[in-house]
Image 1 (tube, rainbow, N blue to C red):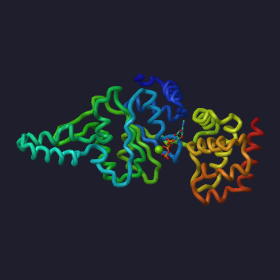
Image 2: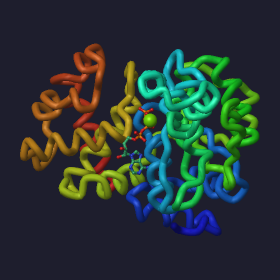
Image 3: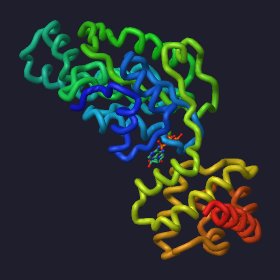
Length: 304
Ligand SMILES: Nc1ncnc2c1ncn2[C@@H]1O[C@H](COP(=O)(O)OP(=O)(O)OP(=O)(O)O)[C@@H](O)[C@H]1O
Ligand SMILES: [Mg+2]
């Protein structure tokens, strides 16, 4: 277990050691979130490293990461705890056969820890050997408002009451990170509890550093070309712009094809690693790939 970092620089360094390269802004809110014990609310486009920072932080601090993946229809039972009905039914049948327990004793046995299925929120509030875990509440925008209201309450007092067992309170509150792709606005009341940060696409220098860290097998020259091309592509009018995850994927595809540098044909053949909509792909095939590549090469040439 690593102690909580004491400065923004230390936070940045700690994350970098796990391979997560973040800018000053994200390092600042992360440091403040840890220092003040406030949840982080991270919004941003797909594939910019929102989910990854929770994993990186957990690794850096030697904590467990507990993930609550949100989806439409997610309810408190799936988020906090459930009773294991099939196991309870078997226990009842066994008690009937052996006839060794009275009704009260059986009920007590059935609603004990043994038959409790802990879901992420309860798990995050239970004591963990390595210290308070990182609780990642991922893609919050996919749930509905009632669940948000429920979450607001859970995050304000970090305790869960199970009628049959009593109240379970986190001895040390978890480190909470919420993410959203902003397919809808999350309620102000929840946002107000958190420190907010918009995770943007990294600039050229940082994206190159990320690619070099995540895919060291890609040569420096090819990495530079890949990053410059993706950065240029993001300025085009696209239905869906590629994220950092796509940059890394694409570079790996190019290496798998033994490409040493970019050329229009290779780009056309591998666009599926970068762009995920047929309209975007159709637009950037052939002559458009050549045009963007020429602009990129002119840019790299003038920068050198
Ligand atoms: N700053 C970064 N440093 C290192 N790697 C990064 C960084 N940002 C993104 N990545 C890489 O990009 C991949 C995708 O990031 P991640 O899954 O966190 O994106 P996301 O923002 O959660 O996207 P989505 O909204 O689609 O869930 C990660 O697995 C990681 O390898
Ligand atoms: Mg994610």
